[in-house]
Image (cartoon, rainbow, N blue to C red; front, side, top):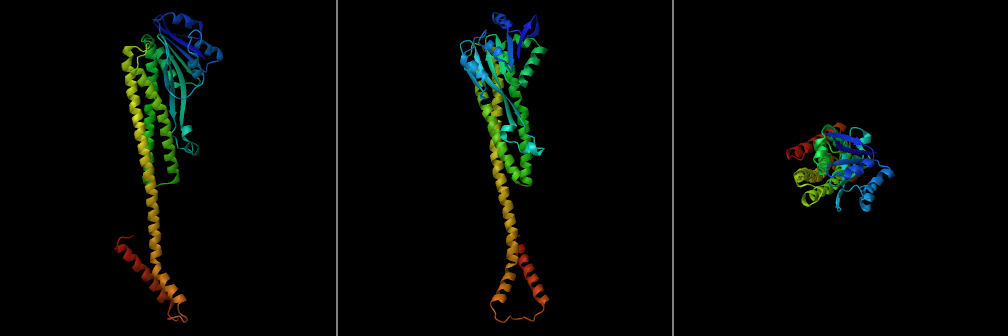
Length: 330
């Protein structure tokens, strides 16, 4: 679906008429935004005429790669960005068994930034596009600041969407830590490994996006105004902190894995300690019964009362246990 957003007589106007684009391009002082959601082949044609974008950039816009990047052309910049959603729900068996690829979903956007226009292409509905559309509807001055300011709003909303995910990750790690300390189960190991893969996937998305923002702030692009650079630097700083937090979370997950393995090892040692105590308590009794049961042709004390031997064995076991307790072995 083609949507053209532009300023008309001090108000935000929208249109779906592709012939309007040529008139807007001929007015360099009138910034506008073209959004293509699930575009048809005919709608893709506007990338060739009237925009005359490079064939390679058009091909990349038609075939999403899920890798954020930025390419500079003669009079415009081509970018690819990802909107990420994260699902950490483990309340049901179905959500508990989701793998990392099902928990991290990405929706790619292709963006063309020109002197007075912003073109966005996306196959699936994207929340940041809706947010930017609402901002333009509420305040027409958003368009007046220029196409690069529209791109800033888009990327700022995109990066702001990471912060709720970071809070969810923080809560999930706290909960996982409590579960490891409480009672280690095989399900916890599966959760730890899944969380590590989730963090790796997030880093694969955040890392290239950080490089895109660094390029926009460090390199000189004709379509990015000097006054807009502080805005992009602010977004870049936010994304840098998010990337650092993901690195810290990954280190924490490695520590949690070591803690889980140590907890399992400690539990096994406690079990073996109890079994060793039981075996050692019965060792003197086993020795007596095996000695008298296999080494004498005629059993001594064969007419002795049964309760004498029973009470003697119990007393020996109790004495052995008391001796262990005295030495703090149990």
